[in-house]
Length: 130
Image (cartoon, rainbow, N blue to C red):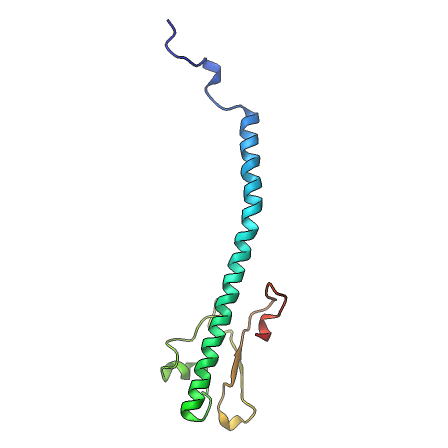
């Protein structure tokens, strides 16, 4: 009497079956991975635009309340216009913002803010022009 229904030599997969499965997995990864990295970059760009909008709004509110621009970014935090200085998501640092002074130096120290990130966006614009 035979105790098992499968022959002793057919217990595993053949090399061809493994290669076919691995090539299918590689093909799926080749399609999915570039889309993933593209979406991460797009998300960082969206956060960068939002952070720039928040900082510029806080600068405008500070000017409307006091008649002068703040001396630095920490002044916006100290006067509660911002909870903290936001990070530049591309450089992952809050210290890389490029501060633009007003035309009249007696009006304060920070008129505008731009990103200090090197490189270009997915649309081809330099981050430093945002």
